[in-house]
Image 1: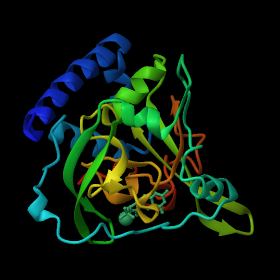
Image 2: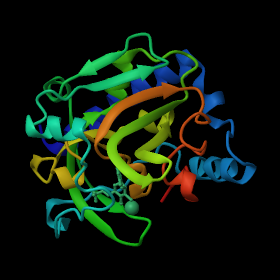
Image 3: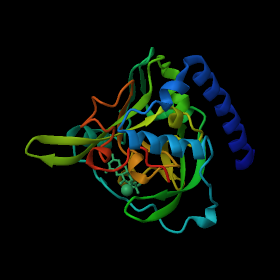
Length: 254
Ligand SMILES: Nc1nc2c(c(=O)[nH]1)N[C@H]1C(S)=C(S)[C@@H](COP(=O)(O)O)O[C@H]1N2
Ligand SMILES: [Mo]
């Protein structure tokens, strides 16, 4: 099957599972209710209204010019991460917790056995650079579906291995979050391969998020676990992500 057909089939499957979830759980209302300051809520709403469930542009192999430029954390140094790295990530388990009926603990092999998607997309960093790379991974929606999210779930929170900030008051591990509509978008992947090779450590091994319609900082690398929640207020300083807590937009639409 060529890539285009595979992609179309994948998108159809997702449209169906997405509807099921949204209709069954009555989530549209909760997804659109602004939770942040009025202006942030409006930006989120306006961007959503404009892009709907559109796909981000996809490119061809010929458009891949250089490697994906590593940015932010590139080499986590916590004991937990180093132990997993030294074992070739064989003992890594992605845990899915929070507002789910069936908490999950998945190895990389488990994830690779699921249907996967490949996409060549452009990564835009808020600092002003872009890279086109090929990403392969497990659609996040397929993983979350297995965990059977509860009706109250509104957000997927990503807890990461890397310490993004050290200060006198302690260490802050990187964290991000997205709403469940973005979580079920067909191009939202838990990526484990980049440019035909196992995801390099510099780019987030063993597992990183691809969220193609938003800026680079949303795409959590070094994913430790995913937690489904009904609020972002209890995370970090309450804005929903490491960078949102430091002044950037939570909804970082491109
Ligand atoms: N865990 C974690 N994820 C992260 C970051 C980080 O520092 N830690 N940096 C973010 C930023 S700002 C960008 S641009 C991308 C960089 O991804 P890359 O290293 O594959 O280019 O990762 C994002 N995800
Ligand atoms: Mo970035």
